[in-house]
Image 1 (cartoon, rainbow over the protein chains, first blue to last red):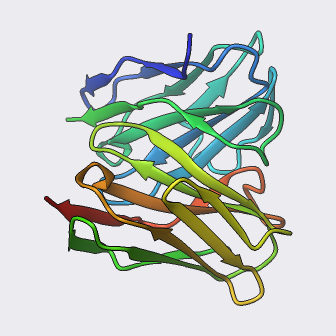
Image 2 (cartoon, rainbow over the protein chains, first blue to last red):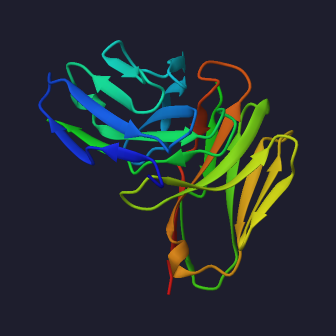
Length: 114
Length: 115
């Protein structure tokens, strides 16, 4: 596709449920990032992949958060046992080669945990 | 830990005015600084990327400057239009520290251009 695609656009989960958020980066982009944006705040870095390798996961807030990119293209962010504080917009971004280049963001998945 | 501050938090101006948005960061050891635009319910669109060795970048009516030593950047918007209304976010890519591959964002400036 022409841009970064994320699905679902909206997700409502009951507290304690597991959720999976999907990101399709721009075709051929090597680097992929996940960010979390709370209401009224700037995005916060979660994790970074270069191809299938997860090179940086220092921003993941707890071990309930897990991300993968097994074939170096599509990525999934999984949140286990969701809590209300996980409610946020989850943004995916990609860049052509490395992390120091221009980023292209998807429209995000808005997660609401009730 | 890198911290990014944007001033003002919100700004409302009449159409046609030139305006300046400010961004400051605490750690000058950066690879680059980017300015993004975010429309309601949408993702971020990259406007300008300034490498640490550069002083400014221009794109159309937008001009961004970088003073790395003082930890400051400005985004200048000329001849503002109602379509410029959005939240503008500043972000830096730091050299050191945790999350070195991730951008540190400010909270943004919410800009409204009155027709």
